[in-house]
Length: 119
Image (cartoon, rainbow, N blue to C red; front, top):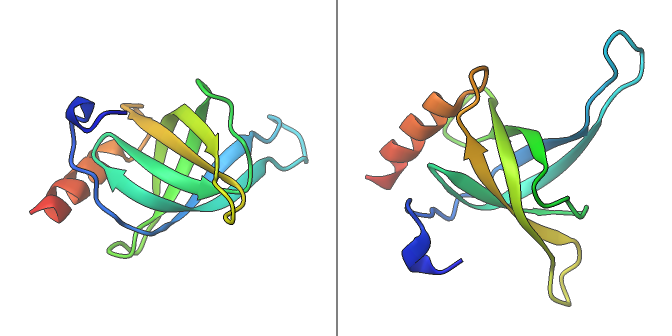
């Protein structure tokens, strides 16, 4: 995406991210599938991650972010905007998420934290 199309400043913050790939079944003893990955950069409206799995573009996924400045995990919803294989010698994938204003997410706390980090 061209830099002039970005609405928010990107910050090179590395944090641990948990992405729920498969939800656990309701009323079932089965667990879901969660990918653990790292952020490459973050902004008020999105984040870019490095992970071991290819993600489906357009998928809406639950994301947990552990930022160094906070004790608790922030829970967000994000849409996969793109997913590309990393260039050799690196392995895995890089993916970009657009964060959604979901009612039960921590999006307000996320935006507030990022605004503070930008200044």
